[in-house]
Length: 200
Ligand SMILES: [Zn+2]
Image 1 (cartoon, protein in one colour):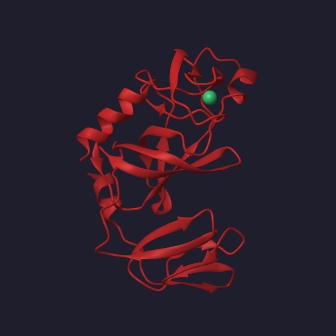
Image 2 (cartoon, rainbow, N blue to C red):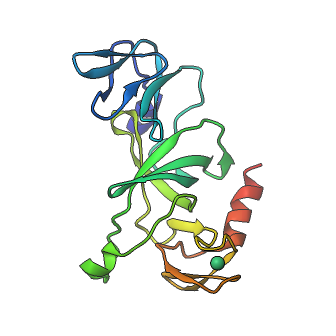
């Protein structure tokens, strides 16, 4: 119940939403003492491409809750983090335009340290993850568990379809290139199609 309350908690006028080192102030935001603050009641949105922090006024769609399963695509990779544009929440299509944040550092047991660092993510990968935190009104997801990670992606080399080779490698059916990913157990075109179908 606590998480439910949190998700509905809106940003209030004057609330801090970002620092000026990270972002510029967008719609319904202003700068004061090096901090970007809200001018309105709403939810905060980060545009990582344009580096803009803005407020979407309330009556906007409801935020996901802790424990929700989201599916989306990687819109940006920065350092050891990724930003995932949410397409589905609990298999229902989401038109919210929200993005979630996940760590690209995967702590899979049995994987050695150096092995871990070589896991690849690319912009456009379709990701499934679980909401673990809504701290500072940001949606944080984990992709650590076996049902989470990349559920489908196209070949980075030629844009062809891909299939899984084993529990961590995919192969392009067009050009044959292999690449390591943090895959879901049901990785494949069919998995994404199922989400897509149920979400309509
Ligand atoms: Zn290919």
